[in-house]
Image 1 (cartoon, rainbow, N blue to C red):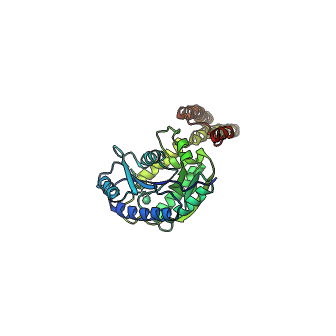
Image 2: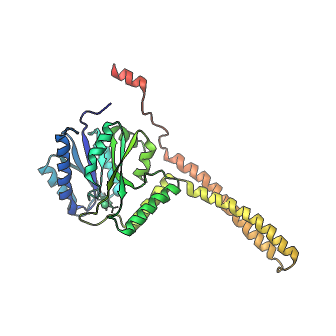
Image 3: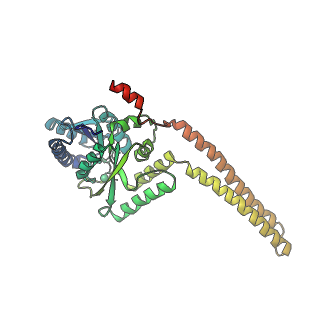
Length: 324
Ligand code: UDP
Ligand code: MG
């Protein structure tokens, strides 16, 4: 099944982006026109800027752009809610008007020329197409190392993320309808999409430098984002505590044996054996007990999320009756 000229929305969250907006709008609009001309997308396609409570002229610039160019639309949030929430707001608004939605940052660090490929994969029935950075040569050494470390650490902590994929992706309306069912407050979208499933594809591109303005993700924000990702997707840290507890209790048995031998050989101070053994045993047991409590908290945590447990991707009967 291939989609006939889908209506595409490009959703762009913007926080204090007055320096980049005009250029971004120009390039994206040219791209949109090119795709319409090539009949790859429907002429109703739009670029949707999401103003995330900016403190500068971002919103009035978006309004101006909209007046001059009908390709451009915008929504504005009541206050700054952060990148992920702004993106969600844009995706949820766009999904009622579009067949497929591409999300990208305002700074054009993501190569807009891979949109063609994303659309091709979408035509080949992919429901999610992830944009993956093939290299980060243009990022500073620091940004590159911390960012790549972040993906590796996430994997280690049991969070399923696509390596070097940020929030540049195409999603079909079907996927966004599923996303709507995820009611979590601590949003980490790039962890949720792999959970949703469906047929997915990947396109590669080189990440460029920000052409104007400053990064809105300083180290502190990146760290808290990383921790949100782990703590909203994984109870593995709790499991690690429980395992540590078992290991420490086990070590305490070895220490007991060792200190008994030293004691029998007679070269210890009075009371040493008892002290050493208690420290290890009590420490080990405490850690183990905290770990066990943690396991239960982990269960509560997963239950309170009340995430959908499955999603039916196809229903032959329904398709038949719909066809009638
Ligand atoms: N952003 C947002 N709200 C925020 C912070 C950032 O909407 O509170 C947007 C920002 O305007 C940009 C995107 O999120 O379009 C990514 O930010 P940035 O490019 O500064 O991050 P970096 O690429 O440096 O990681
Ligand atoms: Mg950026």
